[in-house]
Image 1 (cartoon, rainbow, N blue to C red):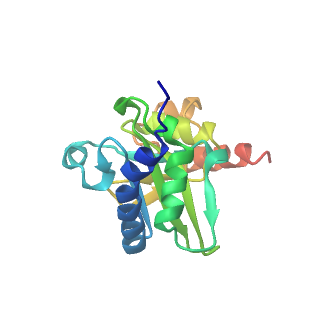
Image 2: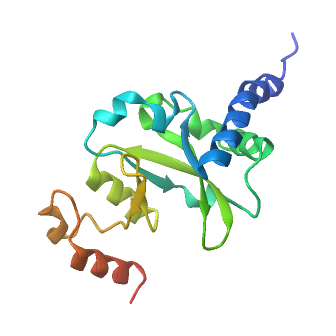
Amino acid sequence: MAKTRRKPFIMEKYADISKTLEIIHGQHCGLTWNLHRGNVLKIASLRTLSFVGVVSVFPERGRVLAHSPTERDFLQFILDNQPMLTTPATTWLCVGSWYDSITHHNHLDLSRVSFDRHAAHRLAWKHRQYSIYLLHMNESETPFNPDDPVNKKLEDGTLYTSVLRSILKWHGT
């Protein structure tokens, strides 16, 4: 019995999602989409949590585009990262996109949703990210080194002197 190819089914499965992602990115200049749950911003149960942060992970798998991402860009990104994106739903790994207003480039990345501030900062620090997107506030914050003893004493992690020290250490100065 000959094996059938599953690629057409997979492409068809993600084609509608890719079109939706193109539309959402076009409207909001960014998104966080979980293949198991959909648009993370629209998940009502997350609104009740005190912290929801989104961190770009696996930066080597990201894409930088000089144009707004198209359905085809999203589809190819999903197909290229499908094994990671379809892992158990508990991982909260997502397709992320955002527009950089300084460089005028659009970015596609793999993002992880975190419900713990220190865990989010640890992820950002590990993957050398410049920011953590705060879902409830629709803004970003600069990551700090969560293993710094000064930061462990803070619940909200907003000690600017420690953040500055972490940034300088991160940049090797």
